[in-house]
Length: 255
Image (tube, rainbow, N blue to C red; front, side, top):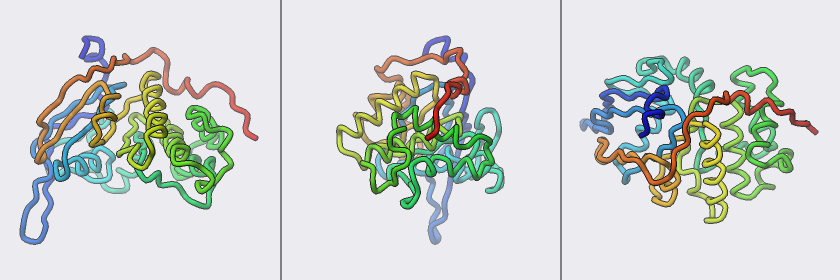
């Protein structure tokens, strides 16, 4: 990485991370001493075959699980040993999730789907944040449509807007194009590329080389260990002086 990007503050620090599960009488070592630092505005792909530890790492990065040993610092805060209730609060403030299966409420409009997490986090001006997020993914004209009235690509754009509405420190995307045709998948990656260019830190868990090619760093796991951590060919965007909150300052008319 460039000297400038090395100076960017760390968003994620995994330090000698281990995760062990007990399956019957057998111990399964899902992660074995993982140490990774991801800095602000990095665009990272995490790859690996089935059983490599990707899902375990995803759950820990998303504060859905905690390591057996080692440390996980998220934006400087050690979240390794926190209770589930405290992890839930951190998830709602710092992590925006984008899932392969969209995870939208079927009887609820796009606008309400984006707004709902803001209700749980007690965010003020929820409607404004939700509408602004939908504008950022070019979906204002569909904000009153329900999921069954949207294409797969439009559903994923709603999911990205839902992640953006909370102004998270990171967007964590799990196979974000896995349920989409090639054209819709390309459009979604174009949106993620643009968000990264605007300063957003993005981590994508994927098994597709074509998706990883969009990222400027690729981390590969095998048997619970990092076996490759390399820079990709895609040019990196350095953190910009514009505050991410400022991206929400333009006025949006809610109809």
